[in-house]
Image 1 (cartoon, helix red, strand yellow):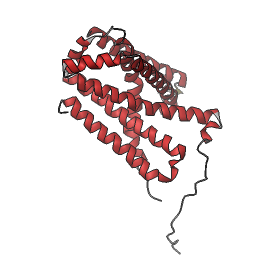
Image 2: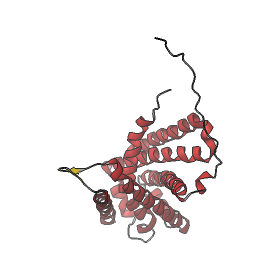
Image 3: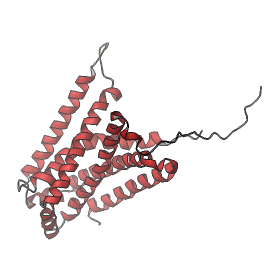
Image 4: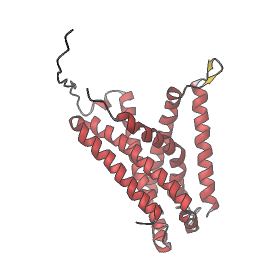
Length: 111
Length: 135
């Protein structure tokens, strides 16, 4: 039987689970509640121009993409794409990798 | 000694209807967990837009106006529910992955879970403080 490459994907996936549990609730409160309530204003732009903050946010974005792609793969397969396992797996992980590279370019200010 | 001939093994997959996950609460919770993880990818796109707009004052102001719209707030509430459910399922998983021993005794799972909740609370407070201080 062919060896699965699943364990390889588990390292970034579990990292993504941890980072998302730690960072996303607070970040969602900022963009979804504090900004609409006017408690965080456009002055926050200074913080978001800081290269270290941009890099940290990129880490969050990239790990979230990988985490999300892994979950999406299982949702799609459970909902009936079981016979297309290889294709679904490739599409999900490829989207995560491409998204992460795009996000890095945005974080660095290239895009 | 005879060497077994190489044979192609085809995995047998029992056909399952696509609504199998509605048949049992534990299956539904599993699908809910996976689906919440998928939603978080959508929020990562929001973060990406924030990161991109932050380089230009005008774009950033427009983005903030967008974030203030009721639709955006509603979507964010869904994201928040998904993120909290993800955090909850993640913490519930930790005692199974992490075995901590204190001397000969195994640290009970409830303590490991509690430690993770404290970690999430601290991280959240630090992040909220960071953004509130920058207003």
